[in-house]
Length: 475
Image 1: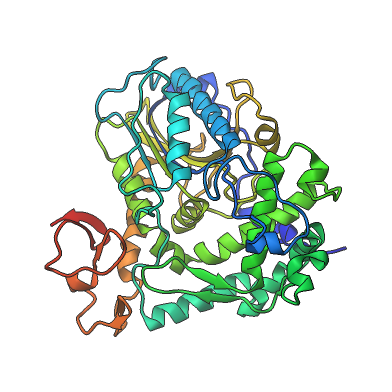
Image 2: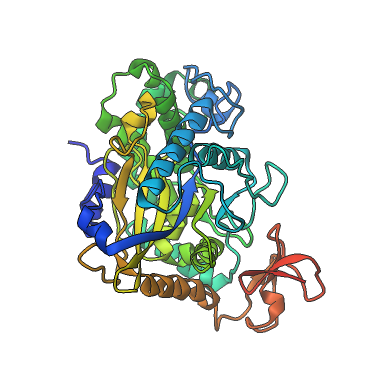
């Protein structure tokens, strides 16, 4: 029997609690009151770049799904699904007493902040329409549409030669049995299944002598300053195909058409999706990388938890934001039920709930909330009786009480600890790279720590909004 990558992922999930639906009992509500919710969301269904002349178009003789949106933008289905999720949150928050029905928020009580990409802004807008249908919520975003906001860009912002060497070795050790070639080889059987579904042997790319199969031994990881971790090789192309097939599966109701005429089972789809999950884990979840790329997101979450009067926050970004943030704060490994994407499914949300106990102590819980495969594909309405899947996140090294809650002070201390670790990533290493050149000053010099909001290095003389010591500042 073939040992597909998805089986490896499942085998690693032993450290996670085996809970799916979280049901709060009457006794629980007698002892705790919900006081705040902070959500970090992945955007909902978007279209891939799959035209005939694209890389995806060339590696299959089949026509991809006719998408309802431009490449990389939220699809019509994605908008409907996100509105449904917003409606569910409204029902849930009303039932918890955090907001009244048809809530008109007072200034400062809610915040909707999205990356400046169409799919993230639109996701936040649709969600807000479902949750707050009469409030006419404005979506905060800081750049022209189509420009990545550095807060949501999982980029390397501190780098040295020694850090790069250590990070690359950590990636190889965690995901490739010590070698880069091993990373792709672990996904070999999964990518062979994708090639079979695509009928790659009959594709234009194969006929032209280009690509007839996905290479597995040529993985290369690139870590550069002010750029997202990158990859070259067959696994990267395999990830693009995996991503496009999964999105097509969500949109196309005819199972045979979704699989280009192949009769695929749900486990087959899990094996296909495992390639994109593996790609994301490799690039963004090694601890040395996660602390680096998730730094601004962790700061946002902590700041929101400490914002007086805030009831609800919705931060909308990408799967890389969720994956790196969970890795950075020490989430135990997991594999999600009722999903073919086992880590950060489309539209999934990391939900941080703040609870006030009868004892006067503040507590916190963390859950991943997402629509099941059936709910995604069949546009099932979400209600308190038919909720999305809610999966408890376990933080390694923190002790939860008998109700599965952490002390809020422990969670905030964990966030603070991991935020502070950013400053030590290259401490004591000479010659840190800033903007591609060696910097002679100490790492403690502000010139090493100042960046413009487009990610480029700034100086003491720079004016406007900058990132200094990992935090936004106005100069």
